[in-house]
Image (cartoon, rainbow, N blue to C red):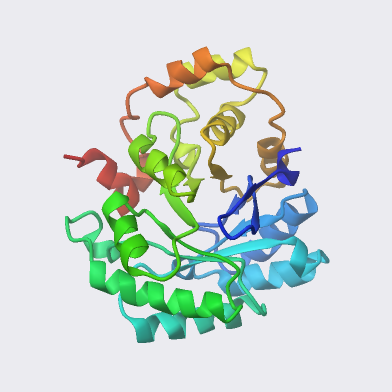
Length: 290
């Protein structure tokens, strides 16, 4: 099953190909969600400082009964933090809230503060300061791997050319109709694993007529087709759900989309809306590309 499959990061740490996203799951509810995911075979849990649920994720890990060393835990340094001192404090806070001795992967959540997302300013100096804090925590063994999220090529080059440790991961918005192909190709050329968050477009792709029709062809749900699609791009898939049934279904994707059908999906235009979530910077920015 896909929950048992892994990619290998540049530092030889293995990362499960399928993880559970926990965005917009509150601190109390996420405890059971994490336990359900681990009980369903998942071994990769993705959270963030900005989600305000790290403490709940930590409780879920402890209460699951699964050995800590068998679980890959990701969290994210708040995107607004662009200096060394705040980053150091935030890393320690995440370790404390998660109640773990180490974090498997910690990433800078955004190259820009959220209020300035994709405003044209790359915040090179601030990202290098935050990256230095992650590098030190990595070298101290508090983090097994470090990376970034929502970084474009220029943002990545800044860290690669000026930092000591190359980013091992770049987590990006990627789903059918919206694939940052150039960034993915660049990352792969640099031995940086790409993770696809919102692989079902936060639910907005599920009623797409082409996706629904193709899913029927593979005797799959639109969600299953969407998750299989990003996996075949060579990325980690991070679908989010609170339903244990959906967790199991999302992992039951033992089929391969044909090259012809992949090409069909690649050519679909960007969905017209992300629904109520369109106000979120990561989604609204998709409609303001130059």
